[in-house]
Every structure is written in structure tokens, then in C-alpha cells.
Image (cartoon, rainbow, N blue to C red; front, side, top):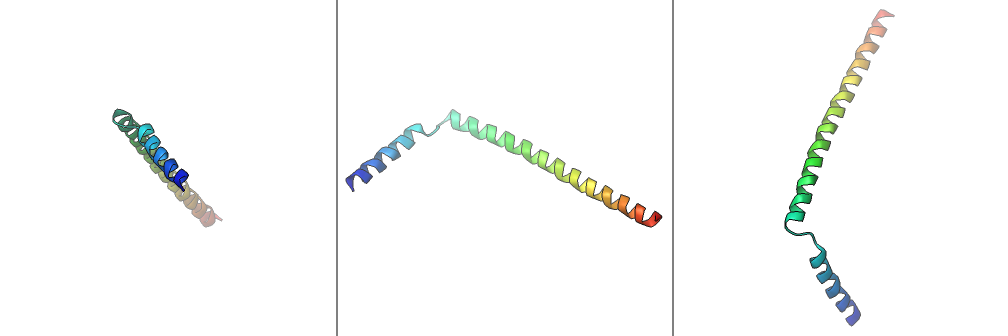
Length: 68
């Protein structure tokens, strides 16, 4: 039982020491936010591209059905 308590205390202190702090954490957060925004823009682009393709296919399908 005492082994578990000592292990928890050592693990907790190790996490406190190894946790990124200050500038490193802010830099990582900034990089994450930039990449997140970039990915959101790419997702928005591909969603609109997919909608455009679906609309084109529907319009072309309607034209083919009407001309037949």
C-alpha cells in the first residue's frame, strides 16, 4: 500500500516538472491554433467543392433526362 502512495507522489511530482510551462506552452498553443484555423479553411473549401460537384451532377443529370 505504501508503494502505491510513494508511486503516486513520485508520478505527480514528475508530471509537474515535465509539464511545459510559460513560453513553450504558449508557443505550442499558438501553433495549434494556426493549424486548426488552416484546417478549418481547408474543410470549408472541400465542403463547398463537394456541394458544387453534387449540384453539377444534378444539373447534368436533369439535362440528360430532359433531352432523352
